[in-house]
Image (cartoon, rainbow, N blue to C red; front, side, top):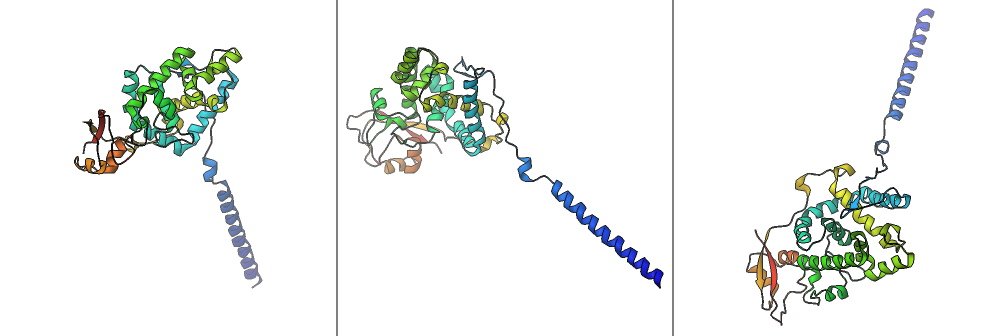
Length: 301
């Protein structure tokens, strides 16, 4: 009887020990299992050494320049939702911009300036700049764009791109480089040339400029780098995920249009569809008292 009791007591100790050790083992395994946070890593970006804007080298070996470039690459890489949206919109509008830039003699890299300016959204900025190229009214009118309540050609991609090319080419002639021309697009020709003269320098990378202009060229460079090498910066998508524009045909009009919604119906499209492709038409009518020839894009279904 005593032997039986001792055996049962020993068995109980063994069972309790086994349960306890098993519980400890499970707890240790649970602690060792990697959490979601431990598998997500924010990695430093290795800056390319061959960065350039329109063929003009970025002196990345200069610590200040390296830090400013790193900042913009980090922002445009790790603000993932915005970065992916810009990649998708670039696929929508770059095919329109690229032949226009070539036609008007502007380096292809300046499509990234347009993206940096407006993010390819038809919204007016807080200071009144509008359209893909974010022209102010005064600048747009100075270069021959029609801007009023009825028609605003800052929203006409073809006409606005021609004006942007003229402005940037003139800035390059005045300041000497495409990089400075890009800076002048942000701060104005006079503003940039005055600071260069005061500081007795001739390079964008040697000049101390307003904060926004200090970041401006680097933002363009970062967009160029990320959008040109999306997988390198962690952006994964299929071709079908990208945005596209519907094919259109041109209808030329040299008279007034009393009701654009009715005009759209004649072509089997809605007012909204017509406006999406012709946002320079600002009202539900086209006054056209001067009998000017306008080109209206009609989406082909």
